[in-house]
Image (cartoon, rainbow, N blue to C red):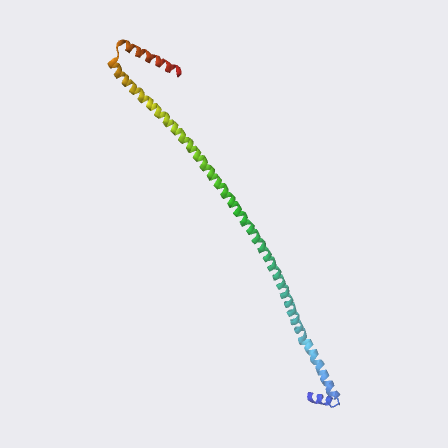
Length: 175
């Protein structure tokens, strides 16, 4: 039928009855498609268009979030670098302070040790002098007693005792 319609049109004669039948059939078919399928097809297409638009919006939001997150990470990295630099500077300052404290402490300890050593030396010197004086006194007494026993006569003995008593008096006055 179709081929006859086309052939008849090509030949110059139009079969209006067939043409009208095809036209009515086409309109009915379009009406049926519109009534039963068109709404569901357009709804499907609208849903697909909405989904694509939502996906595009979601992708744009995700890109924006990713950019914000990258900025936050960059700021955090910058802050952590500044904080690390501050920690290093504080550690250097603390190290320098400890170094100076240790050096000052060592100098003070060395000074104190030197002063104690000087006091100890002075004390030992004084003790040694006292010991030497005591030994000299003992030796002098021994020598004197030996000399007195051998060479002293009663008048020399009396002069020696007087000078000894006089020396004791002078020692008591100086104290």
